[in-house]
Image (cartoon, rainbow, N blue to C red):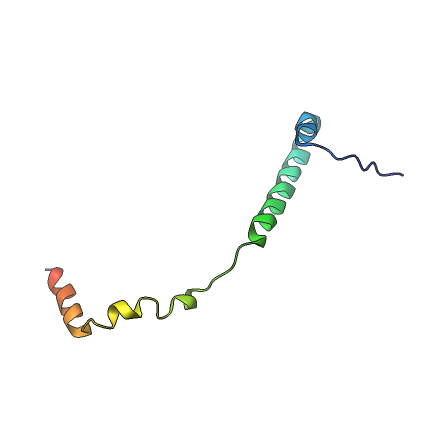
Length: 77
């Protein structure tokens, strides 16, 4: 059996959707969703929470910890 290499357009696919059974439409949706997730995630750089370690250290380096905690606790009253 020869495979037709004709490229379908978006409009071609939309036009044949009503001909598909509901389960086929659902399966197509799942395939499209999976494909899109892989495509979107391909360029996403993953980070971990550990990368935040030390962030803002320069801001806190001049703060007296005991004074800060005392001020925070006093603000609760």
